[in-house]
Image 1: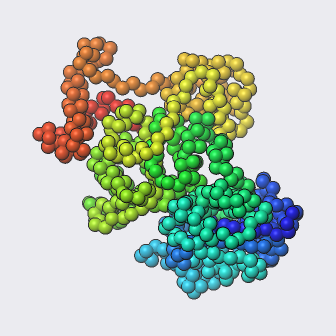
Image 2 (image 1 turned 180 degrees about the vertical axis):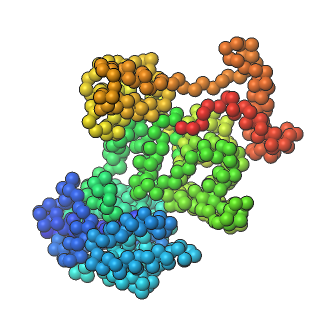
Image 3 (image 1 turned 45 degrees about the vertical axis):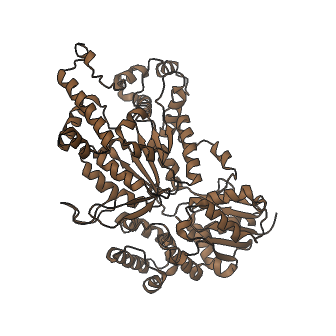
Length: 609
């Protein structure tokens, strides 16, 4: 094995350049032990690694580092600042606890941190200050390592060059500007072209490692493109460094481990995601592929309540942190359409009565992230029209909107995912035709859980995920009575996975709380006493031929209201909005809303999931 290694990485978008030294130290330590990489299950405590490289800084096996940057990195803020979270008491406590682990000047740094918080609160544009401000106001620069990821790319580079011992001693770290601007990095084809041109003269061998962790998704896809198209990339290794947050939740800078990455994305698509059922895994694989393609076409998820739509979206698109997905449940807007416009598009101060300060809507918050509109069918037609206007742009993934009360349009870019528990034909009736086309460029469906033997695998998945302590899974424990009860063809799971979760909890309680139960209490009786099987809600069929059917209990008023509602829906679809529909029918918009409300209360199923 060669005695030295080369490390190529895009700039750390989320974790900041401070993590570069942690990774380099870990790989160098592996070479000290005559290994190409650390063992796959080996964890590296960020604080211990920080003390090691900040005292020594000498990496005997490092040949070269290429840290890739956009050409306008000195003027770019990078990712959107999370200053509101940063200045919160909880965040500040976490940061101070982190600094205490490595700092020799804790009191001074605490004071400097307070001054930074005051600067952010009083600074109108809410941007983190540049390095000149830092040099003037922050006494112990090495302690910035703990919060470096919050600053702009240029500030991070300037800090690193002055404060990293590895950079000063190795003289092997190169900061290379690609021929592409930061705002163009969302395009993996342009990124791949810039990478090819930049790295064309570099020599690669089996000791070259390309990092795909912590960077913009387009870099990951671009390197995969090059591995397919360029023979020069065949010998390099792709790696990723994974944050192991579950190993110590109390640490701000969590341990990491280094793993190899399969170069072939299609092979990666065949691996199952832990914590998902078989059905969810299928959709997970498709969404992961969509995300890796990076083309930002909209996605519509369809399926009954409780089938895991939200779970899958978060697992796929929150891969760089939970804050990467902006989740809006549109069910909250049913009785307050004005709230929908404010929550989605935001408003300026004084836009309406009660708007005492500016509000950033979901569109603004989702810039460079993912916007997930759950229960999208609950949006009223006016909000749908505004949403359609925002989505109708020439550039895929770029959307323009105007906050309430504002005159200037804002332009943002994000991945839009919508979800609904309505059948697709019914959803098409509830959503404006043009908007439906716009939000359903790609569609994935979830199925209801089916009774029978197959439910056993789903139950095992739920049980394992819930991780009960001191209770055995009755399926795996070969409880024949329970297996027969659960897998009966007559069993109905109207709540889907929520029903399985409820059953799993009851099974664990029966096992662990036996001292509180009657003697010889059977598991089946306990389940039937505490889990009430529900049948799926049936939409009441209102038709003239059912009027005299005593079982339907349908009144003449209900039939009349339903007829009026059908006329109203037809007028809305024809005209596109409530106001025009009312004008055509010779009634007021208020009349239309009242008609729809009357029918909605009797014919639509419960909207809450």
